[in-house]
Amino acid sequence: MEQDLGFIAAVEEAKQGLSEGGVPIGAALVSKDGKILGRGHNMRVQKGSAVLHAEMSALENSGRLPASAYEGATMYTTLSPCDMCTGACILYKVKRVVIGENKSFMGGEELLLNKGKEVVVLDNAECKELMTSFMKEKPELWNEDIAV
Image 1 (cartoon, rainbow, N blue to C red):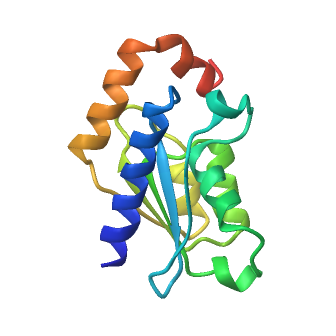
Image 2 (image 1 turned 180 degrees about the vertical axis):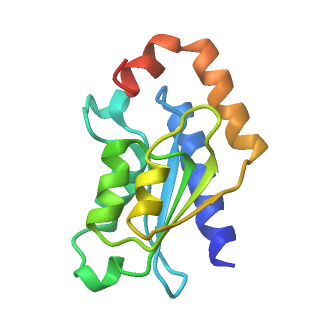
């Protein structure tokens, strides 16, 4: 149930980001007891932000929580997390990162594993389609998002 809710929320967020003219990446942070703490999508375009990737947005939307709320949590994300978002997951002691797909972009999965985090890659077709279509339609925006 937890995986379904978290992953469904992340995909919904990715679609919301795309509908707003942004990068279609979504994320949801789910507590160890299965409650969605926060969800969000890449808001770099919409907010003119340098740092509001989907995972950062989900953390921001979680609000100020005690450290114990993050421990044991799972970050669901539609795309492999970049180094910044990987670092945030490590900093907040997120236990597990569930990734929709990592073919369009390979982020900090090895670092997560080296830090003792569980990494699950779903290889989800819908996530792949969202990203490959976006990358073809807006390559300049995608390159800006990954600092190329």
